Image 1 (cartoon, rainbow, N blue to C red):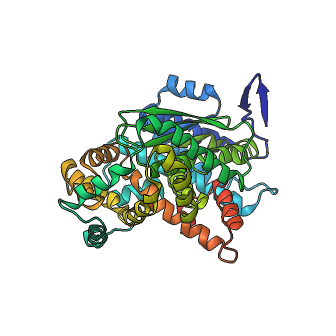
Image 2 (cartoon, helix red, strand yellow):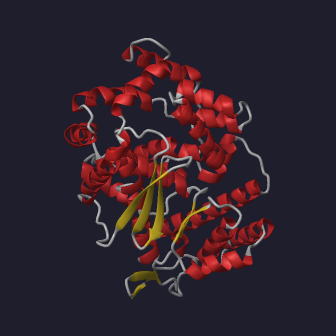
Image 3 (cartoon, rainbow, N blue to C red):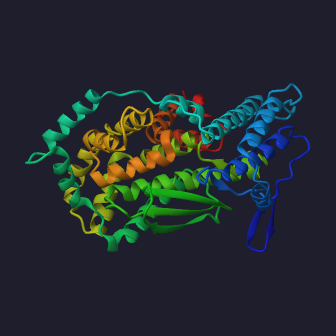
Length: 429
């Protein structure tokens, strides 16, 4: 239930008495907020009762106390005293209880990491994100680099030739907001054909600097987001659609709105009013946001739109759009090189300089971008798997779910169902 106070929508978090999980869910949320007092990156979004955040700040529970309370909550969650209501769908009940249990387990691992626990890259990603990325070898990347070498003739190292090639596709600073706003409009237009959005939904765009990431969605609740775009490094024309889809439509903005509408408001599942970043929820969030790009635009639709609209708007040559995306299609095959750099670095096999070298050589990052990526790995660690592995898992899941009906309507229907559900990464395999 929700009540309107002036122009502000407040979620009423008083659960129906028949919900046996509400007490567990409320305490889970408060534990996430408690961890946030020790880890500034942990609470990515929260739109539950404001007094809960104030209580967490005032109590400032120790990490030891948080872990003890989380363990007690895990025990209670698995006890026979919590039974599914007769009216509840058993499959949905199982998904919900497993979701809370897995999120709690990840919370305890993050708490242990804050206390000094060391794990390998794969151990950490499994514990926090319920998934392990496949290992790729440098020979896998070398094969792609050879194809790129043939497509980018000229003198000098391949990375320099690639960088020179991309300079022709940088969005000029004075055109950036106009191009990005048009990309947002197009992504929203494609999304609303298949997804019913709240009429009051909106988001604000800000351009920022000195960040380890290229874009970020800060969900505010009440169907509102703040999207920040980092302008530290040149922004290429393909990033307009990528960021508009990933951060906006049908990515993070839509994901959080559907969660708020279908799970928090309609069902009063208060556990979804908080989003702990270092948790399995992030693989679903990042995976659907990245897959949403190709769901919103087929390759032909995207190139056509960019040739007709975005390239001219940015003052770029639209006749080179196919050439540009031909190169980017090869570059996409190097995406797992970022995982391998993070794996080697976090496992202690290489240091930060060598990690940047690896990203230069095998991911084709310029040195500034490689160093920015290493800063990202320092801050977010094995989180990097959520982008590429997440997208691959989501794609495979949706392809399997729509095997009998591969139409766009079916894919969007299953996509919305996934965004509105408590599914875990392991449910996608």
